[in-house]
Length: 280
Ligand code: PAF
Image (cartoon, rainbow, N blue to C red):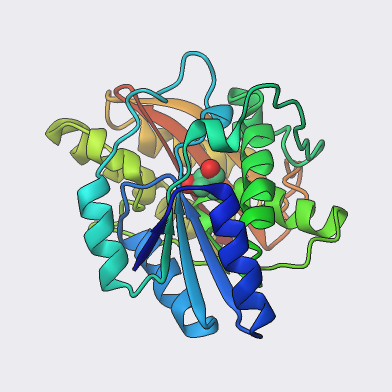
């Protein structure tokens, strides 16, 4: 596995492999890799000749009171996992290479970035879209893989690719869960034993919503109340939002039409977790 730290060198590598007719897959991450990331890497390996894993904790997508400094890091573990997944290039840029002095160009996906996490984390998706566009320009991938756990992020990136005519295919990948149902996230490492236990109510509440819909419930308010009641069974959870929305526009659904996205964000202790499912 080759490790590249400079954006210029990464771009030169990408252009030379493209010139040879090779297909490049990119899995962009902030590191602290878990099974969710590894599923993207395994798929990327199948789809393309060259697999690039980028690892960059992007300051532009963290708000001033968020966990940028406490974001979990495990470079040694990540190196092993990347090697096991047969990553060809690990791209490890520095912050000053991605955001040099006098950096002033940002990408704003205006509508899709507004609701859900965009409302609780102003500027978050501007930071995400900007860094992802930069990574696309540097790594020049044919295919880029993103997990559906960050459903809004995936939609924002799909919209950016469409709006800006970017020559890259976005491959969405299903949520990977722990055996007990908790969606895999780098932030799960920050949970105490009690918080880890409490976090199980998140996937349980999604299952509860699915059950309501299977039993014929079509009132979004009633479904949200059932989700809320399940989450409130533990005192350790503070709900940020529970929303039923259109899976393409992410606009709230006043009347339930299927398929619908049920998206949840909550704090378990100080750790913010998100999860979602499509109700069909
Ligand atoms: O999902 C993430 O880890 C990040 O938001 C991403 C896509 C790597 C951009 O920093």
